Length: 534
Image (cartoon, rainbow, N blue to C red; front, side, top):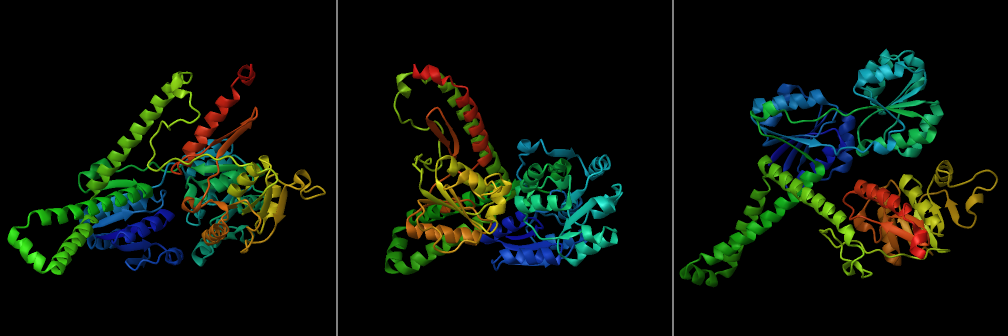
């Protein structure tokens, strides 16, 4: 299929790579030269054609008319752009697929969030205060925020390092010394340092989600005691009236990935069925001829299979909708099974549950991860990285008595800020002999003497190098950004009453595991342990 993708987000890059991987020819549009450069850095597929520049509705219509499908992967807040794409689809008679972002979980950060329904409400919130504000919503909205009282002194816009963004800031008379030109993604540490540096009491952001560095902003606000003014994401719904005019559907990147995989499986099955049918329906004469020219016969069958598989890749939105309905039914069934499992707790004292090992009550696509509890007391564990994930791992390892070596360019400052180091006097006074901090980047050989390792840098290439060294040395390693490279998985833990409890999932839903762990910890804390010892 020929598909036009309106990009501009990380989802746009992801869906373009995905569709190109399955053989579709793509015409990907980005609004700016900067967007094109960023896009080109991550794409190697030959069947992707990048188009730069903002398009009018007529230009969109002409582009869409030459393709089979229009995919809208623009920013969730670019409502007008999405409307224009839909209009162009209507006028050109093409189908429309909206790529949705996953719903965000802000519940754990409610203590730092001030919600705003829109930009006007955000401006009102800022006008009700006098504190400095770090603006992280991009350069396009800067003219709007001149309505904030004393904006020249109070507002510190963080924008992309390009002349277009800088010119907007200069034209709207923001102070030069307040303008911060940097390219993300921004870590928790960078956000926290920046808030402290400018003395900001507020950070303005949109509900962009994990791909937009949303949680790193919220956690930084909590660390420095600032508030996050969050503009809610617009509600994205398919226009029911327009559905009657053109075929419209929506999906997340993960839903689309799952659908394409299933579509490919169906293609392979159908291809094999074609072979079987071709062989079964041959006449005796045909079989005699084919035996005489077996190589030609095999070549014909292979050609037929290949054509069948490639045809199946030209999916329809109806197929996608059916896949989503099936997926929803499966998820509902799983939820019902979990409810039934909760009811089974009443049988805990029966002989059925007397064995030390029990069969999991939920089904797994792959076998569940087997829990092994290691004695880490006094043993060397090497952690590469000192960001949010690494610090959580370090704290857990120290609780279990490990001798933790941390290697990261800013390890000392990051661990100090997180309260893992006491810098009054001795840098490691509170963890003497248990924590070694090395302020530099990872080097080959750093896993020497380690029993297990953790790769938790923000660089995929570095994490992969750590994985390779661990594999060569026969060391178990947890790779934070690639579960397929992990040989063990960090559990959510609970310790107490001479017990250690670990909880892991199958890697598909970290939020579910976190919330489940919270409930399990709560229940464990409520047990009357003394009565069990009687």
